[in-house]
Image (tube, rainbow, N blue to C red; front, side):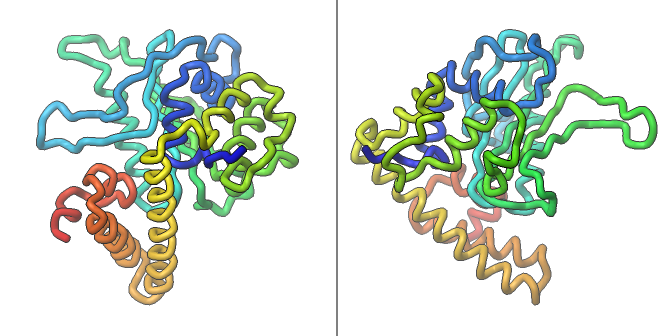
Length: 282
C-alpha cells in the first residue's frame, strides 16, 4: 500500500475539507479548549474563498473554513514554508472572517469568536516548544483577555510524541501529519486503532486519487522544492542586502517561477504573500 503525505494541498483539503467528523476531531484535539462544553459537536463547511464586498478589496483563500453549532468560526491552514508576512496574512484572514459575520444594523453581541489554526511545516521561533497560542491580552496588570480572535501556530518539525504529555488525540493527529508520507508502507498500529485516524489514513491511499490528481500532487511538491531552493539562495543574499529586501526578492523569484508555470494568481498570492499588483508587474 502506498500513501500520500497529508500535508499537500490536495490531501489536506480532502481529509479535513470533506469529512466533518475528521475536522471536528482535529479541531477539538488541537485547539486550546479547557472545558468539555467548549468542544465542537457539529460543523458546517463555509466557502474557503472569502470574497470581498467590493472588487477593490483583497480576496483571500484558505484551506478549510467552517463554523460550529454555536456559530464560532474556524480557519485551518497548512503552510509549507515560513515567511515574514505570513502572520500578517493570518491576521488579515481571521479579521475578515470576524467582521464578515455582521450584517448592516446587526448587534455587535452577535459576533462569535474566530479561531485560526496554522500548521507550519517549518520552524520560525527560538522557542523549544512547537505549540504557540496567541490572544489579545492586557499585558501589564489584569491579564484580561479580549475575546474574538485566537491564533494557534504549530511548528510541525519540532513535534515529537515522546516529549509531550498532553491530549492523546493531539499527539495522534500530529503523528498523522508528521509520520505518514510516500515512504510509509505500514502505518503504526496505535494510529490505526483510533477510528478517526484510521479513516483519515485511508483517505491518503494512492489508489483513491485519479491520475490527474496524482500529477497535481507531484507538481505541488516540485513547487515546494523549487521555492525552498529560492528561499535558501535569497537568505544567503539577504545577509548582505538586508532581511526585508531579501525576503521580497525571494517572494518575487518564487512568483516568477509559478507565473511561468501558469499557476492561478490566487495560488501565487498564497505561496508568496505578495500583492496582486506585484505579481502582475512580473
